[in-house]
Length: 283
Length: 206
Image (tube, rainbow over all chains, first blue to last red):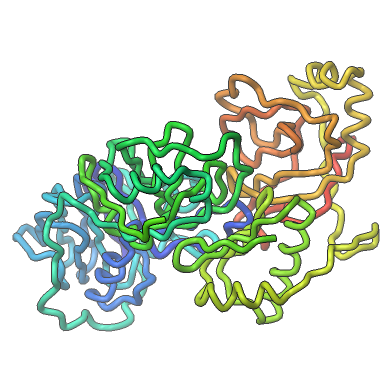
């Protein structure tokens, strides 16, 4: 089966759970920024969780199903229309042949996930169909008029009638484990990180969420030799403003990582201006 | 070597020098292949080896503390084959590099072809290998202003490293030449031509 991209929106990409296992060759993990939302969308349409779906950015997207099929939209609170009628996100939607699926602009949050029964079946690259915006691996971001193949439907849609939605939040709480380079920072820096709030800035993208707030002063001068980076690493460049790495992060980097946050999905849905509060053990 | 925790599922082996990094990288890859280590990623870098996707980092850290890897001893008949990269030595920065070294362009090329490099680690872009082996007195500074576009296949130097741009990108390394070799191909296994631990010679292109 095939879907047609009617309206690609600001940045709509194909995403699955990424291409782990190649970081030693400089290949980013990539994959859905809000992975729980993609997994849920897949479960709703009866797909294995690792199937590829679409990730939209703020403005949503619209697709047409050439043949009848099932879709589900998750991630953020956004208006959904299925074959011309208002429809609920967070549940399987039966779409007739030629039917349009429209995901409107997000009312809260950033990224919607649209799963199609059978999954988006573009050719995998190194085991993943994800678009990697840093290195350019995987399919290019979608454009109006693109067509995408979908795979065989393996099971019926999930009999789900209720999906809990997180309340819209202007404050994101992020548990953080300090290290591996917290010793590059002063006690004052750790106290500021854990005791003040930061704001998500508009220059955030799939590579990382850039924050603004009180600068985090270093205890050591000089440059850290480049070292491996993990998802959720809170890197502090020379200007002292933290950057939290998301799925398309580079595999190595030369700025010290003061700590690592475990839950990047909520951060991936945090709009510019959202307040971020770190929680962790005091030094 | 000191082991540091990285988030909920990572460990960072903080090594004393690049030699210890290579020793631990080889040991950890071997242990993982033998089923003695569970990690999704083992990523060497300049002074560290990162383990990520480790189910039980505390237990793995305890195991690592018990292991005492032997330095990788290699001869020309050793276990990692030497990769020859045919290089046309016509880089824009070659005269300047020769000047840094106080020698002629021809002698600079002679030096570069005489070195057996080793892939210390990859990063920056898929398939971009940081090659060590340049003697300390031959290091060259990065360009003050990076070039907006360095062509794919450019062979370049920066600091103590040599590297080859797998794809066209901005770059601040000094260009010594170029190669036709494809450095990254997603249809190959492994996709990178130069993998950590590989020995490399930048031979003259015929």
